[in-house]
Amino acid sequence: MKYFVTINGNDYEVRIDSAVIGEFEVHLNGKPVQVDAAPTGLSTSYLLNHVHYETAVSKKNGNEYRVNVDGIDFTAIIQDEVEKRFEQQSGKKLIDKNIAVVKSPMPGLILSVEVEEGQPVNPGDGLIIMEAMKMENELKASARGIVKTIHVQQGDKVEMNVALITLDIR
Image 1: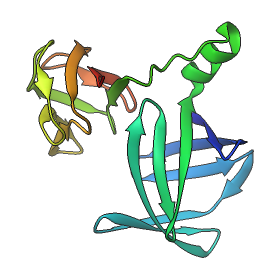
Image 2: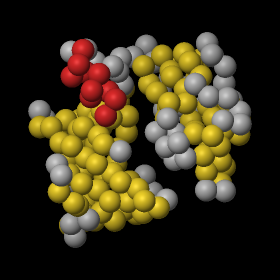
Image 3: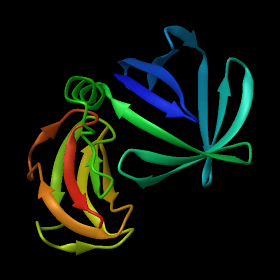
């Protein structure tokens, strides 16, 4: 999967190739980057090309993220290939800052949808329970809003990064 990241006006292309679940290759602007990651509580410890970084990432809104690397905060705007292509062809942003899309973090099976369209949700409310790698995972709302669209139903098999629920976070 290819992502386009903008930080402080600088654009980066990040390609993540996954041949086997749990193993992946990362390329930054076409060059391979050696990555090791280990979650350590609220943050993640990364080794990038043998240099250690402590990071924490939280969603601001739309496709904007607050990123903290070794105590320094900045905003990253992240688009996938579809969003970037749409923007280039139409000159318009695909992502509305008042919309949050909950995507599948990995391939899996939808066990249950815990909300209905039109239902208000708060941060931490359960949205979907999915099975992935023989484990049940509850996907939760990261922002306060209203369930706008449910894109899946119980029993659906989904791939990684598929839209599951769209929230209106106005």
